[in-house]
Length: 101
DNA sequence: ACGTTGACCTTCG
DNA sequence: TCGAAGGCCAACG
Image (cartoon, rainbow, N blue to C red):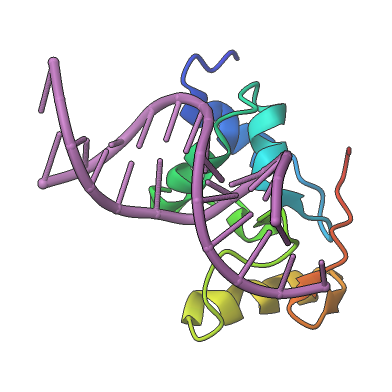
C-alpha cells in the first residue's frame, strides 16, 4: 500500500526499526525519502495519535541522545524502554547501532 | 498568505 | 570534544 502522505511513510520507517536497535531522525527521514525532513520526523512523532503502537522511543537525534531534557519524564521513560530492548547506554549516549546504515 | 515554531542536521571555531 | 550559527522544510496561529 503506497502512502502518499509523507506522514504515513515516516510511520512505516519507524515501525521498521528492529527491536534493540535505534535510528536517528535524519536516517528515518532519509529512508522515508526526505533527507531534509529530519525535523518533520520529530514533528510527526509529537503529533503521533494516541493508541498508535509506533516505537517512537527508538528514534534519537544525531548525537545518539534522546531529544528530551534529562529532567523530562518522557526522557526517563524512553531511556527505560530502550534499555529494556537491549540498547547499550553510555552515560547519556547510545551506541547508535542503527539497523541499516 | 505571512511569520514563527520546532522530539533536527551539518559545519565552523 | 564542546559550543555557537546557519540551513531546511512542514505545521500552526
